[in-house]
Image 1 (cartoon, rainbow over the protein chains, first blue to last red):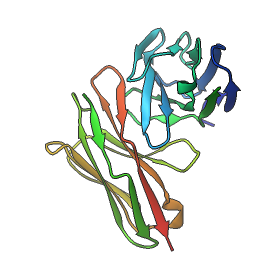
Image 2: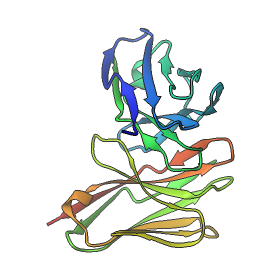
Image 3: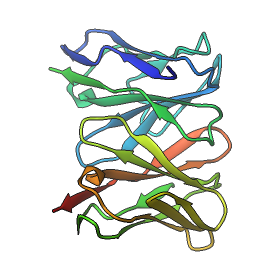
Length: 112
Length: 110
């Protein structure tokens, strides 16, 4: 089944404790992206990757890191999480960036 | 900067027709997408317009006017399961950025 998977689905952590949210797609897509969604707001792009080893900042990259060492994986790293990073995070992929995106199920992160 | 505007909320009756509007201002244009998002779930693709005009797909249609920076999503024969948030999205530049509107929450009532 073609899909985008994210882990964990739910995470409660404390300020400053490094964490990684994994994202994997099995569709051989070139483009991958991370978004955060907060109540009343749409999806805001954090980082995106046009292909392996090619990543760039979206609109809200502060406090986040990403890497794209393999085509299928695009982990999101929070080196020192803060409460303002409490949010619902979605990973997405598409064949190329201008095509429709397929979204993972989301990761609900709470930072206390 | 990039800007997308959609109404925050709309209410309609089961069996009726509803039109959700979206206006956008972006640098560069690579088409406009509509996604549906049920509460607590991931967005799913509904439609894509890159040329002016109407694209029809079953009960859903989407319209684009590039000169006006305007699109709408038309939902016919509304069903209760159509209650969801509808997101307008524009990939811009040729480098991979995407902007999403804040979404329109549609409530379908019996």
